[in-house]
Image 1 (cartoon, rainbow over the protein chains, first blue to last red):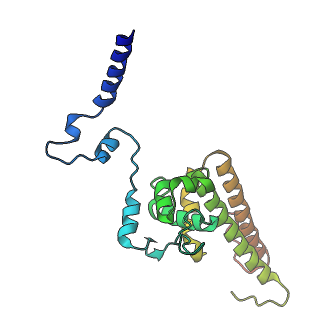
Image 2 (cartoon, chains in turn orange, blue; image 1 turned 180 degrees about the vertical axis):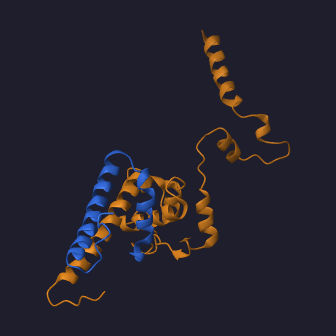
Length: 163
Length: 58
């Protein structure tokens, strides 16, 4: 019985270890976990490409315009990355969706540019489609409001009719 | 409108990516906006301020 359990444990250990091929780390190479994590589909714990771009650029920009920065003033000098407003979310998400397309934009990249974690982002939205939905509605709300306001001005008594 | 170019462009290009009720809701809002514009153009046509050989709803 004991021998059977030991064999089972050894077998499980072997199965677990066997996922890592000897070719994952070449002779003489300093082993790191990252290639193994990537190749075996484990949690990466790495920053997305966008994050490195942001770090290299110093100040995140999207198409050359400044991206709103995380609030670094609340409670002294401590950053408050978990306090993005909905408007800021929509603005940055719309920039990314416009530049590179909805399908090609990940919530991880969005969170990185906003300076918050993906988990924090999901406190504000349920998913990427929520963002797109909100952007579309906000877009139509604004153009509808602009046109309605222009028509009100145009038809108001005594208003100038030239536009 | 140019101030919100990213939002409007995203709405126009990516609306098709929405599904289910989300798509329906945005499409209804878009229909309301188009009705507003079409009605305005039609009123201008009837007032003789715009040519009327083109349908306001197209």
